[in-house]
Amino acid sequence: MNNNGLAKMTMTGASRIGCNLRAGLAKTLMYATGIALSAVLFVTDALAEQEFVSVTAAYRERIALPPDAILEVELLDVSRADAPSTVLSYMRFKQDRVPFDLQLSYDPNLIEENYSYVVAARILSEGAVLFRTTSAYPVLTRGAGDAVDLVLQMTAEPKKPQPSGIAGVTWEAFEIGGRMFVGDTPPTLMFMEDGAFSLFAGCNQYTGKAELGDGTVAFPEAMRGTRRACVEPIQNLENDVLEAIAASTQYTQSGDNLALQRENGVVTLRFQKQQ
Image (tube, rainbow, N blue to C red; front, top):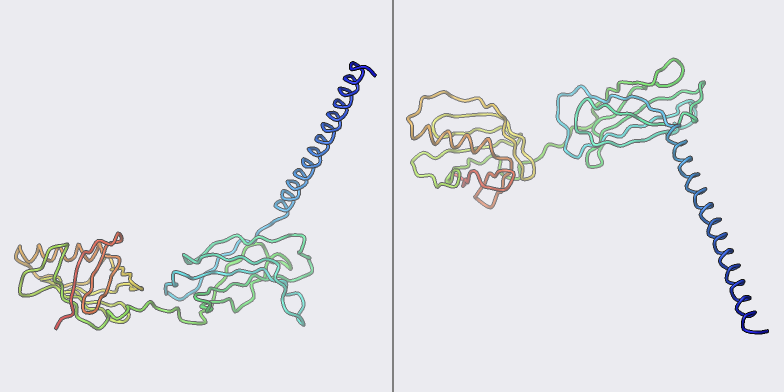
C-alpha cells in the first residue's frame, strides 16, 4: 500500500470517529434535556396541586409576646376517633403581630370528602408553649370552608425580661448628653421590677412604664408628670434630660454606674448609684 492509500484510510477512520462522537453527544444532550424537562414538569405539577387554607391566629389577652415567639400551625386528619390525628400540613412562622394572618398550604389529593379535618396551632417561646388551640376548628369538608379564625388559649405566662439588677436603685445623673452635671440637685431615675419608672428631670417629676430587656430599654412616648414652672437654666436642663431619655434604647450597667445609650451606642446619660 502506498502513502496515498494510507492517508485516505486514516482520514476515513477519523471521520467515522468524529461522527460517532457527535452522535453520542447529541444523544447525551437529548437525555439531559429530557431529565430537565421532566424535573420542570414535576415541580410545576407539584405547585399546581397545592391549595391553601386561610388562617387567622389570635388570642384575647392584652399582653405582648417575647421577641422569639414562634407560631406553629397544622392541618390534621381527625377522622378516626380511636386513633391519633394525622398531620397533613405543618408550617412555622415568627409571631411578630396579633392577629396573625397566614396561608396554610396542603395537597388536595390527600383530602377525602367523607373525612374530617381541623386546623390546630400553638405559640412557643424558648421551647415552652404559651398559647394553643383548645377547641376544634373544622375546615374543608362536612360543610366547613377553607378559611378559619383561631382563638388560642394561654397556657403559660410569657416570661418578662428582667432588668438585670438596675431595678430598685435610685440612679443619680452626673453626665447629660456628654456634659458633666454641675449643680446641687441632679436628675434621678429609678426602675421597678416590672419596668415602671420614676424620673426627676431637674424640675418636674415624671412616671411611666418602660420595656426593659437584657441591655435594652424602650421608654414610652408620653409620660405623666407634674407641671411646675421652672427658671430658664433648670428648664434647659430638664429639656436636655427628657431629650436624652427619649433617644435611649440601650443600657449598660457596670457596678455602681449605669449608662443609657442610643441605638448606635452613643451615651445619652450617665448615672451612679445614689448614696
